[in-house]
Each structure stands twice: as structure tokens, then as C-alpha cells.
Image (cartoon, rainbow, N blue to C red; front, side, top):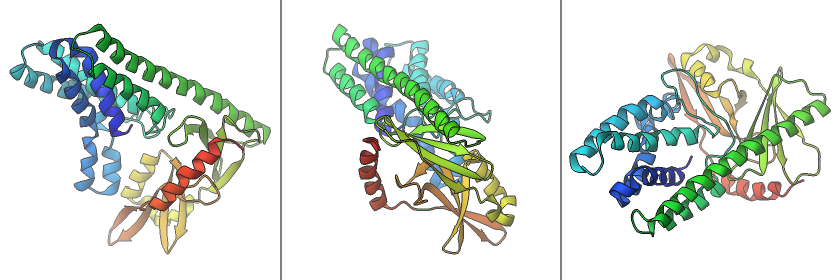
Length: 331
């Protein structure tokens, strides 16, 4: 999830664990703990694009990280604040760390919670930024901050934030189940044979959902709003995997394909080969446009392949927000 959400979650968890003993420090340190796992993004400054993608939400989002660094920070804290014992400090840091990847596991990218095992949990029931999850949570956290340390009201507001946000998360899982059945029935009604179906919410909401459907030689993409009255339409995007040619045998390309979990198409434009990651959707509500949110140019330079992420156009992002609002209203 976005940084603000993780800060709010970390602060709320910190308050719940040690707020009564260390006061506002619990929220402050919890907020810091909530951001630490995402420092893995700094790897992009020291390695190539593909390795940075692989590192993101890997080790720093694992149970092992939460235990190891939880112990380290707990030991450090006992040196300057004796109000809590070592095991209490460990519980504090562990909970603030581990709730970060647990939340991220509900997004499309997911997390390697069980690192070093190559298992990425991605439930795909909430977008990485969802105001309906974050804003009520933030409001209750602020209300808690305004109360006296250890007061019943402070505890009540903080707990309400955790309960409301968690309840919303449960609702998104239910909505995902409902929309999955909608897409499944639409595929059946249209006599479409498919290999796999995956669904996810569109940006910033849980009203409009998108489906990625794998068939033998193409991927179908469709969307559904709870306000729709017309049948679901699916747009075909040929896999075109053969266009990779000898690039398919390159280690860097194999690594990128593994990251996409097989959900990719290949396109040729401007004299280059592009690998498009379907998991994160498109830069337009109009599926026929074919501009994917994550697209990587593959260039053979000497004896190695250079992978470059295609830059995003801000004007396209602004237009997407406007189009999304219209699409959410239904068709």
C-alpha cells in the first residue's frame, strides 16, 4: 500500500501494543516502523530494473525480516527506554513490521511473506491506494492522538480505526468474490474457453473491477462496475510471445517473465520489442488502446539484454482518473 497508509497502520499498531506504557512514542515509532520495509525501493539506485523489481516486497516484507529486525530494534530500545521490557519491545517492532507485508499481500503486487521460499502472496482485493481504507483509519488515529495517554477514549478511537479498516478489507474480499462470479458467468455465457481467470479492483476504488483472462493464444481483459446494466465485454490482446525470438533465451528476460508470473504480452513498436505486464492493467479505460501501465523495452546490447521501463505520461494518468470516474458510474 502507499506510504501514508503504512504510516497510519504502523502508528495504530504501535499504539495498540505499547501506547499505555510509552505514550506518543508508540505512535511515532510505529509510524517509522511502518515505512521501513518499503526502503527496499532504494535498491533501484544500485541495481538494474529487473533485479529491483525482484527485490521489491521481498526480504523486507518477510516474517524472517520482522523477527530479525524486531529483535534488533527491541534490543536497541531497551538501551534508552526502560519502561518496556525486551519481550514487549520485540512484540511492538514485530507487529509493526509484519502487519506491513500482511496489508501489502492484499494488493496486486503482493509480498514474499515466506521469503526465502519463492511464494508471493497476492490476494488482489484492494488497490495500492484506496481512500476508503485509509481516510477513516487516519481520522480515528488523529482522534486518538488528541486524547490523553492511557485514556479509555484514546484506546477506543485507536481500536475503532483498526476495526473499521479491517472490516473494509473483509468487504473488499467479499466484493472480489462477487465480481469473480460475474466474470466467470460472463465467460460462460459468451462460450469463451479459458485457462485462468484473475480479478482485481481498478485504481482507488472497489466498485469497478477488472478481469485478466488467459486463453490459449491471447489474454482477454474486461471490466465490471456494480452499476453496470450492460453485459461484460472482453477485449483480446494476443500473447505474441514468439516475437521475443532469441531474447526468450536470455536470463534477464526469463527473470522478467518469472516476475510477471506468465501474465505478459509482447509488442513491437518504434523498432523495439516490449514486454507488457498485464497484472497492473492499462493506462486507459478503453481496452483497445493497448497502453499498459507497466511495459518494458528489451534491447540487446553486446552480449547482454538491457531492460528499460517505459516512462509514464502524466497527462495519460490524469485522463485515466477522469475516465475511471465515468466508467465507475456504469455502462
